[in-house]
Image (cartoon, rainbow, N blue to C red; front, side, top):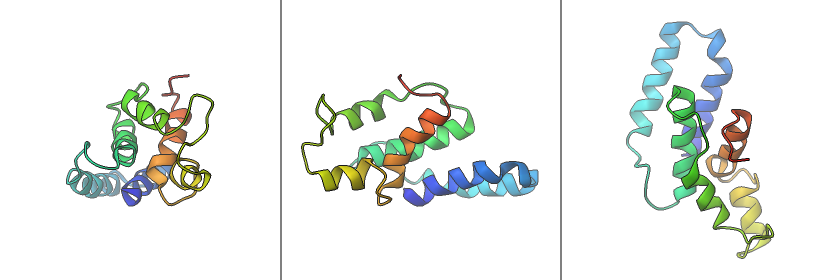
Amino acid sequence: MGSFFSAILALDIVYESLSIEDIIKCEQVIENQISKVNREGSWKTIRYGTHGTWDLYKGIRSGHDDKYYSAIMNQITPDGVSPVTNHYAWERVGGGDSRVSKSGYMDVLEFTRSTRL
């Protein structure tokens, strides 16, 4: 899922420099592969992050993502502390790079102004 997430971001970044043919090819590769991964299942926030980013890219989503927000908020206490461990929180949602689609999706939502705040 992290590879899909990174591919979507990369495509969005270089979009203006590509021909329409190259854009279509890239989008088809991503669409063909990401469609093989269900939106629901284990590791929900990773799935929500990758599929949500793809939805934003395609213009399907324009608002906040309640499922993702709820899943993230269930991983921390009301005062912002991870009940698991500080290492887990950093690696999984703090940007430790091991779960880029989980941690990076909140940045995508913020950048696109699709947050709840």
